[in-house]
Length: 216
Image 1 (cartoon, rainbow, N blue to C red):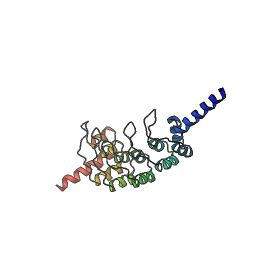
Image 2: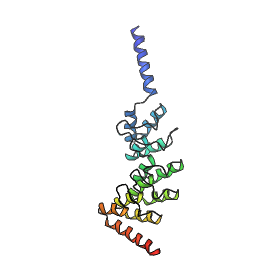
Image 3: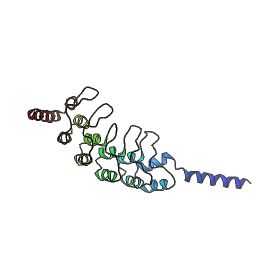
């Protein structure tokens, strides 16, 4: 009788393990780029859209952040993957891919229908902050809103200005970014540049505004 009870307990335990891979093991495999382990746990029922317990990041955001490129490919091919799932802080996978300069992944996500425009922070904000011109051009070619407003009304131009990304600032201005807009702090892109001690950016914007005024 005791043997039967032990056997039943073992079978139930094994069945439960197969039915629900735990989140800690899943995200550990994601972080260390264990593509085989992640694929196995997905096949066992792990959701590709679950949030990491501690920081609330999606699996794709974790993989991109930790340069787990093999796992990124596994997740992108996973049935049911939702590219618009947001981490607890609002980040999407496309934002993280843009910030991490992963152009091939950005292109793959766009091909799968990832959204360029959305409320709040956008992928263009992140690409501008990182100064990644090729990725910025990809977004702009897909009608990214050049003056998209984050929750505090920060635009991609303000973000790029604060980070001193001079070429990104030039690209945004050429794409029609409005350098006179103000954030909720009451600052323009020029003031963000000045506060961050980025005189090169401030000079670029000043020349742009002077050229605009001369045309009027």
